[in-house]
Image 1 (cartoon, one colour):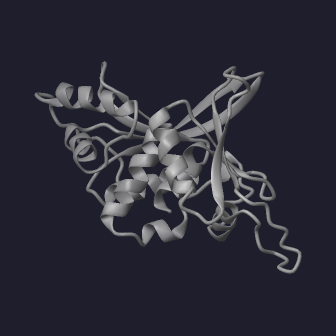
Image 2 (image 1 turned 120 degrees about the vertical axis):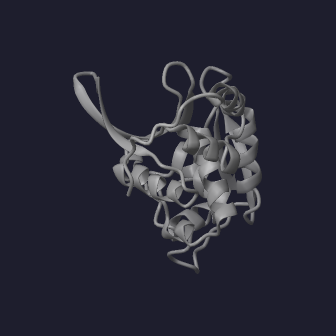
Image 3 (image 1 turned 180 degrees about the horizontal axis):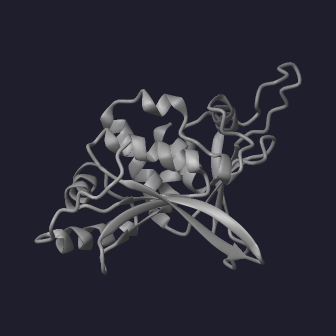
Length: 220
């Protein structure tokens, strides 16, 4: 369940609360991880859609056997959608996403798993110029909650605002950056990445040795 929550927050489509849950990503490791997590739910199989290979694949959690819940009004036919609704995430757009309260009650190994999957989706690694591990979202609440969870591991980070223009419309997003050497190494050792980004994290680890520590970060 922790893996599924994280996948859906970072790369999931949940805005249609009456439809199926989708996950869009080109990394086969993450796609398999999502598929395994989703298919643990009752009566669920994951189907891949990629328009004949012309776009990034979307994986949808659909019912194996379609049920008509005529006598059970208010219940979701799709068990994954039912789970998402129970967390308050169904129907949300990207800018409204948040970390469900249940995640803050988890023990550190499961919080580590949550963050690992989350960063593997919308996170990235920089090791040219100033080394950094970053995560970005159009939801300020989500980013500040990620910063809070990082502190559980003693990882210091800073949140910055970023504005971009597309079709003459300004779009807002927020990024949480891990910048100092000590915190970067804690992230490597206690959280990490899955899939293609794991290779970049290994390169960052090699790059960090011999670097000085920078304590200039915001603390909650």
